[in-house]
Image 1 (cartoon, rainbow, N blue to C red):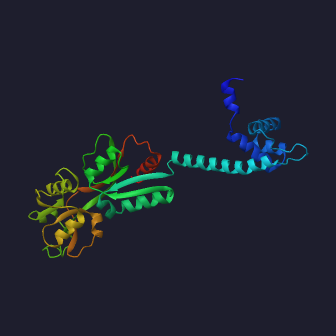
Image 2 (cartoon, one colour):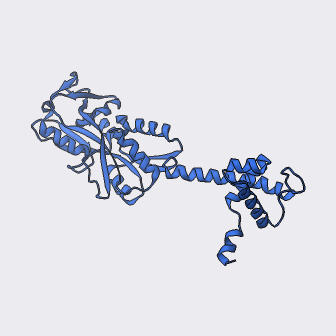
Image 3 (tube, rainbow, N blue to C red):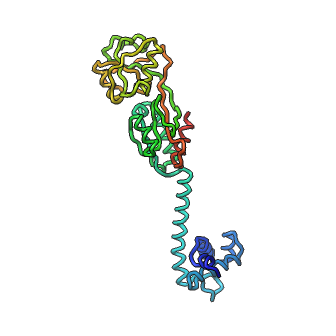
Length: 305
């Protein structure tokens, strides 16, 4: 016998244990072979091979029925545990391969939470795939993009326009009308809607972003559409800060419609009647994503578009 041949017959294989378990459970070679879908002589040969590996008899052949020797009984008890663990491990690996389990790190801009999209998408995803762990972190948009590109995050919710790296791709999942957020003491606060041009002399507050990114870009675009250039000389770290600045009279802001849920005292939200500019919410992820769980998350969001 070759060295390779000796290696093939010198160690347990799961099939040996499965055959042995079937025989013990059925207590009959013919029934066990039928259950396994093999010929009875083949099952007998496998049991003999297993006994050769053990070096001791497993079946008491002095009787007509299938009875175990003490060695056979000990092997059976361990074999059941080994095969069950192997089946559990294999099932787990298959779930991982199908993207049904794992961990996903998700970043988001705060306004994504206000829009309701974040909550709805995560709730339905967890309902369908509860074994996937989701880790959430609020983060500034450009920092998100850099960390997703580096592989430190898996997925992000951003507000375009944004400098999306070439390694990433983005998909818009929501387009929201803009509202004007003004102090309750403002001369126009009693109205339900206004023309944006009525605010042309106001100081506009935007997040701390370059003019071509996010809400800063949205504000410029909407005001240009209304026929004027906005006076932007004040910025806030986030929309909660901006809302507080509005409440004390430091200026006004254009915000996505979802922000009207942020009902801070002293702030009034008015609909805009004369502009088509929208605020977009997009998802962003790596083009060459290999993690099955993340791919399942991406596919879930594509179904929302």
